[in-house]
Image (cartoon, rainbow, N blue to C red; front, side, top):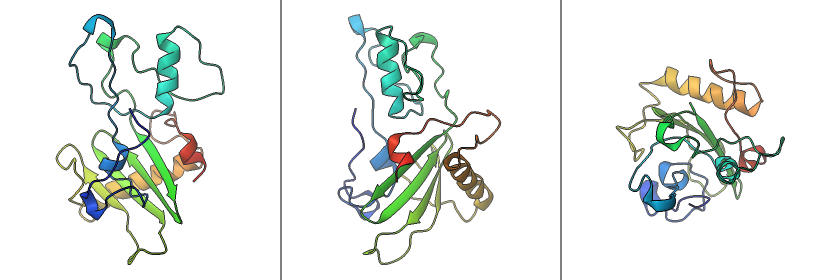
Length: 182
C-alpha cells in the first residue's frame, strides 16, 4: 500500500501539487498475502482508512490496541465472513501549499469540498459530487441535478470536523492525523 496515489493526467494534473482529492489521489490498493495462498486472488471492495492498518497489524499478531491510540478497524478479522462495506463513509482532508480540500466517500457517492484555494489557481473550485460505481473516474459532476445529496454530504463533513457523529449510526468515522491538522 501507500499513503496516496499519483495523478497521471486525470483532471488535468500530473503529480500531487494540489490537494484535489479525486479518486486517482486517494484510492490506494491494499494488497495482503495470507499464508498458504489463502484467499488468493480475492478482491474486496470496501472503504478503509490509514488508521485501519495499525489495528489490522495488532489484530493479526494478537496484540491489543492501546486505548487512545488510533480509531481504526481491523481489516482481516473473520476474513471469510467480513462484510464488504462495514464502514458507511470515510473522510479525507489534505492541506497542500495554501490549499485545503475535504472529501467524503460512501459506497454510492463522493463529495469534494474545496475549502481554501491555491493562490495560483485561475478560478475557485466549487464543491462537486460523483456517483459510484457509474462514474468511478469522477468526470460527471452531479452537484447540480443532485444538489440535496451534495448538501447532505457537505453537512456530514462539517459534523465530523466538529466532532459530532453524523447519520443514524451514532458513531463518527475514523479520522487520521492529516484530517485533524489541515
